[in-house]
Image (cartoon, rainbow, N blue to C red):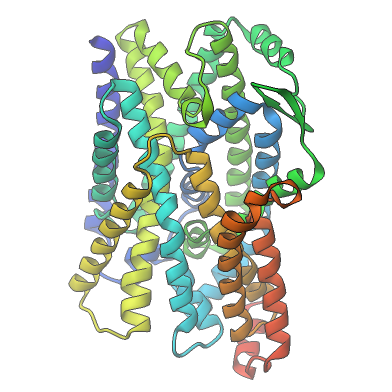
Length: 507
């Protein structure tokens, strides 16, 4: 009983802090769209870096990555981490500064609005396409967060998965509508700290209960292909080759960063572009270390299962509970240990909330600001605009709950599809918009639409064929989108002199 009290106490305190920060910034938030959606471009370097990466590191950091490493070893997750680490660094290095400067120059406060203003799209067609894409792919992303919360509480307290998921969804939605961008970004910073604490605690505790570091390595070395970057471990058949095509497909995760709206918004919001160098260093180091530790937790969990300390976890849905299993074990060591276990579990909530709040805020801005007011040109008061935004949050949450209703669904699988969606649709056009002045309206529209079509077609029609076609849908979508942008831009009229001059003035 004392174990559950300690866990609940830690989680309640954590949630209380999140709500307090939300209320604090909701009272300070200026009554303007730029204040609510972009924090009036006043984000400091530390908050910019950590909120960007915390909103990126959704529930796959403490569930998806450890779970996949637990089952199949380091190859699959290892190449994924390499791709993500490189993508993080390059995104901060080549995209952040120019996007901050360009978006301020044209007065854009959302990603869809940036595309329309970049190409002087007076009818806001690009804005409409981009806003619809955000709604389509943020729904499954949000669903992965709800699934993580449901799994957390149902595994820990033995409550019904669906009831736990619904309560979690209500908490996330309620917290999201409290404040604007600064509230979300500040809570994301706090959540990144909680995630870091969770990773450190589980690593040291896990190694201890698994029998020490030598026991962890002995177990990993005893499993065929488990520690090989060119093989993957299969519990049933042993090792299987991890070929070049699969490696390219897996590292393609890094391409997704160029199209993530909730990360790109942090670039637009930083108060001084000179501070981006500091942000880049902080973000890159934290991402690399946190993901490497997440993989290590999967290996430690496998050793702990072999030692009989935690149950053997079969299948992706079970293996993704490895951190929860360690937390439950830790909570049995007295009240203080239970509180620490609660902090670890709050880390899983932090992974979920830091992504969900950013996604829901971005989706709300897409509907209220981009679609209703800019595309359909409906004049709304500030009060009505906020009502539409909150209704959007609620609708996305309902659809997300429906998608996450199956308790056996995989967080990693859900996130990978949404990640491919944004990487394949927004990634190429963001790069072309910033660095190729010949890009025009036709190329931008063709790139986004073709990328979105390929993501769905490859995921559900091509990839199931297996063999050489078993490639992560992000890679073909990204390439097709690039070709479409090039072809349509070159085959149609050149951009106007006004567009070219603005492009060159950005520097």
